[in-house]
Length: 235
Image (cartoon, rainbow, N blue to C red):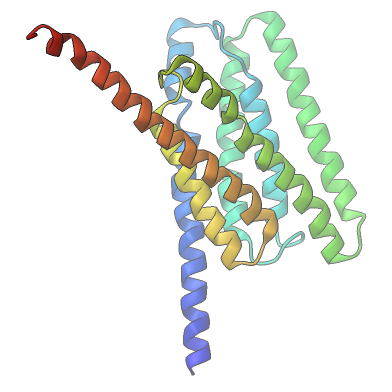
C-alpha cells in the first residue's frame, strides 16, 4: 500500500514539473510578439534576423519527435510543449517571410525547406532503427545537442552584459522564463530518469541563474550610479 502511495506521489510530482514547464515555456513562445507587432506596424523586418526562429523551429521539431511514444515512452509533456513551440515558430516565420524584402524571403524559404529536410532525414533515419533503446538514444542525443546549443546562445548576451555593464539587451522576463522552464524540465527529466531531458535543461537552469544574477547585480550598480550625483550635490 505504501509503495503505491509513494509511486502516486512520484508520478504527481513528475507530471506537475512537466505541466509547470509547459506553462513557463508559453512565456518564452510569446516573447517575440512585441517584435512582430513592430514588424507588422512598420511593414518591414528592418534589421531583424529570422535565423533564431528557424533554429527554434528545428529544435522544437527534434524534441517533439523525441517526445512521441514511438521514440520515448512516458514523455507526453515533452511532446505537447514542443508541438506548441513548433506552431508558434511557424507563425513567426510565416510573418517574417511576408514582411521581409525579396532577398530575405528567398533565404528564409531556403532555410525553412532545409529545416524540414533535416527533420525528415532524422525521422526516416530513426525509424530504420529496429531496437527501441538504440532509436531513443539516437534521437535523444540529437535532441540533447540541439537543446544545449540553444541554451548556450545566451552566452553571447552574458558576455555583452559583462562588457557593457548594462542589461539593456537582456530582457528580465525572458531570462526568468528561461530559468523557470529549464528548472521545471530538469526536475521532470530527473524524476523520469531521462538524461536526454535533465542534462540539457540542467545546463539551461545554470545559465538562466547566471543571467538573473547578472541582471540584479548590474541593475543595482546602475541604480547606485544614478544616485551618486544627487548625493554629491549635498556635499
